[in-house]
Length: 369
Image 1 (cartoon, rainbow, N blue to C red):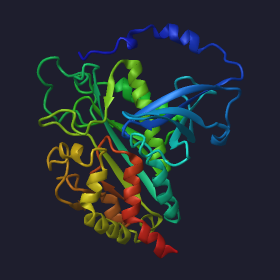
Image 2 (image 1 turned 90 degrees about the vertical axis):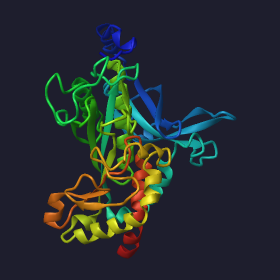
Image 3 (image 1 turned 180 degrees about the horizontal axis):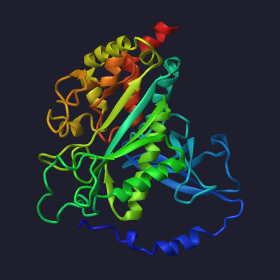
Image 4 (image 1 turned 60 degrees about the vertical axis):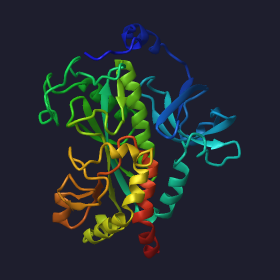
């Protein structure tokens, strides 16, 4: 059995005693932001005199922005508010952008704020009503780094029986998945589904459809809830695209994409145009589909274990070994959406959706005008 954290062994019933105490009219607001090269999340909590009704009711806040060579104050700008599934009503979770004191995007601050530039592109293509859905895969580990539920010595049975499985000898960590799902629903995140994945102790949840910038907002907060739920259970959720070497599946974050034109009758024509544009920019997209310029995806996109090759662009109908998949129903209906299977599990959804909009939608938007 994988090692669980000491904090998870604390008396949770005693904790509930204090969480159930009345708090009057006060409201705890937890500010969440992206930090450390855009792959980690940070937070801090403040007390407000009353429950905020809209994002405009939540004040900006400052944080220290420390790097190896500098220390300066940054600003937290609230952009999206959710209900808090841990502290419950009326308490809130708030996703924030990080700005410099000059109110410029703090991209240099550990490369964390890509929302600002993404939002500008989404504003340019808003007449196309771009819908996104992202399929976030993750792997559960003990705090010792060993996959949760795997034998202490040796390996579990080979892949083939774990995908969408049921049974104590196949599904490892179902409690975590179900608690995360409910937490997302309570918070107001647009989570649309979940399932066990191909590798044992690997799971997936889907967020969307979301329009424009909302995709990144909801996926990042869903990630925060996942890490927070795992903390209660004493395990770790990793977004490493290839957490285990050998004949084990990697972890991706497939993105499903459509515009109002693709969803309309005859939209397959616009889907095919988008795929041609993506083909021309394959290398550019690979570079932004993980936070390390494609290095993480090299371990995952090998052309095996249900993944396309990182070196070659491919597309096809109902084929899960290609870069871009057109689902069966889309091919039959001649309209709908397409799926890009290349983004890694640890991708920044703002960066991915921004790249997708730049490549596939900017020219279409100009034609629409």
